[in-house]
Image (cartoon, rainbow, N blue to C red; front, side, top):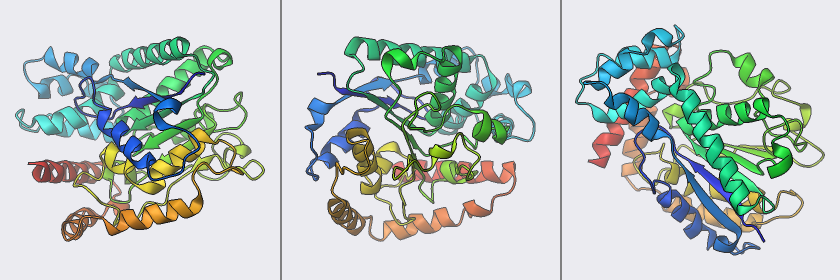
Length: 352
């Protein structure tokens, strides 16, 4: 019997082969605390996707990283987050590799033909893996940060180029978007909400996945600035939000005190949260919402245990610094860039 394939897609920054091991290990270790109706390793097969090498090769063709970013400014929409990123990065010291390799990827993806190379590469990897393993066990995607926008565009292109391609491989059971920047990187929100095929639906002919799980930490600037929040009745079809007793747009209720490591934006940090990993287990194992893969009482117990183990003292220090960014009141792109830059410098400071 085919296993359930889970594609792992990284966010911004440099990622080498094996980048997903930490995230997969987090899911595996947490699965042990629940009486799941499956054996983790027998049920899931994880397939790592990677695209950061495409950006690394492009930047390497320039003597200075700032020159690589400057080369694409003219291609970016004015009065946009990515345009502001590009303009600001050209003013940053070229030695600030951490800032450029993280935010530079966002600008490069939005501006250049590299985006098409990224989407083509990922589509090929997804189709090849599904044909090799067989899709009878179903498949899902966990995407993080910039990867959320990348997979949104990749699925959009795959469906638009071949509306019947799901006939052979089925459509994803779960599309988990962790720190979703799809809206942050959008120029035209009408296209994102009304015109895109990338939304959940129990009808595979009307959506890109069965369940869409959207994970947002309230102190993660990338997720909170222009938070991904589909307006009622404007995203896809009515059954996007409710079909009988089955809701297929799921948002775990993450608390601003849910901090167990310095980088709240980190993928593994999100997956450590019981409300996040149990939502993935629940819908990837048992798509019918009247049958629980994870007993609700077990979720409550795990969540209480998790919240009792949050970083003492340091949590309040970091939480205060992040709250001072005042993310919910950001109204212009330069301020947004400043908040993101401050956040990344905080992370770099704590990591060192």
